[in-house]
Image 1 (tube, each protein chain N blue to C red):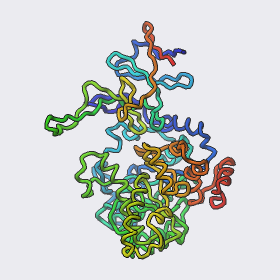
Image 2: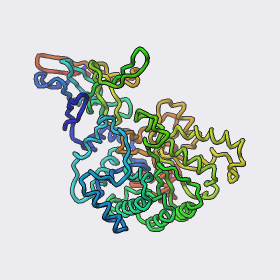
Image 3: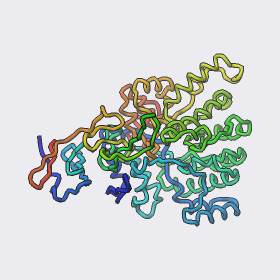
Image 4: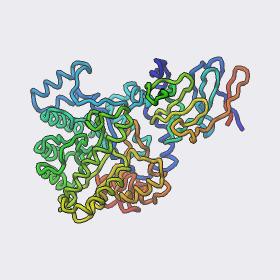
Length: 121
Length: 414
């Protein structure tokens, strides 16, 4: 399997994202809370650039013991990235499509070598 | 550029470049050789509200024009069209909405034509039927005379200033001021012969009775000219029946089907198919799942209540199968259900590809092309062959001509 240089880790701030073109692969690389994640940039829906849109916290609804709703709020722990074509949302830690977690973007291995970051395909 | 995310956080994204955004669509078109097929998009949009200063001078009535233009000069504080509460861009997640103003274009050609050509070229679309966006709510305007004059101004502007710059690749079905049947007829008589006019469109967000005797002269005029009548649906959160919905997904999912279900039902049970057998009618942007639902509901009741539909000589579903349907938004979650839907509506001959671009739930041509149960002929017909016949559109290269001939769509188109 070949490796492709993404860039210098020191220049990759938390919350940054890069799109890497690697042969037939198009890979979105995210840095979130110090960790790196890399996924196919082809949305599982209609093939949109899944990794090039907004990152936004998961929206949750708080339900009380009596089953009443306390409304909507942003998750403190789960971040999504969103395909800009139609709004398909993916879990940044797993690449799962949050509307149907059986669907997953291809995940790529991320390798740190000193200050350099690589993806393997 | 930066976009607002959760809790005020900002996320950096590229500025909008439609060709760049749709680069994967271009890849799909190349992989599937879509440029060898005539592809007609029967429902695409522009944002005419960005051009009101160019549109309003075409209003006929001096007083209404002054009223409208004075309103337009307030720098966005005034409103001329009925407005909708809605969140089409899903809170900015569909980034082309908030980024739209950032897209650059070249001087010398209308911006909407340039942007249109960018997405058409990316998708492999040869011809596109251009519809307005905000004007889809014109049926909610409380002033009939303002509805008439705004439709008139838009229809003059789009046929004189926009479509002529598209090199023949864009056409339209013009909005009728349906609250006024006499004025609707005048629109057909005035604009029906103009280049780029493929027919007329009734904005479906309204509850007027489409079977009213007052409209027969309008339908006849469209039929006599060999043009098409379309019903373009939308949503209206303020409609009483939807006021109980607390999420936009509910209003959107139901609304777009609801209005066409309403009008299609009235159209069928009043025997409009018998009265205007040569008038092609297209039901636009309601998805497809409603079609088998309505066919079954109407057939079931018709068998017991034929006395209420004395003009019908066959089942309601058969009249529905005589009409046309735009494909978007295609509910492509259950392929077997979709295959049944295609069979019931005779999709091979009655379904017309539509993108609805740039709206949030657009469909690419691949949504049709990749369906595993479709024949080659069905793919070619749905993606453009049937529409080429309806709107008399010519092939743009030899391969397209060859394919139109191969599937029996060339003679009428040429």
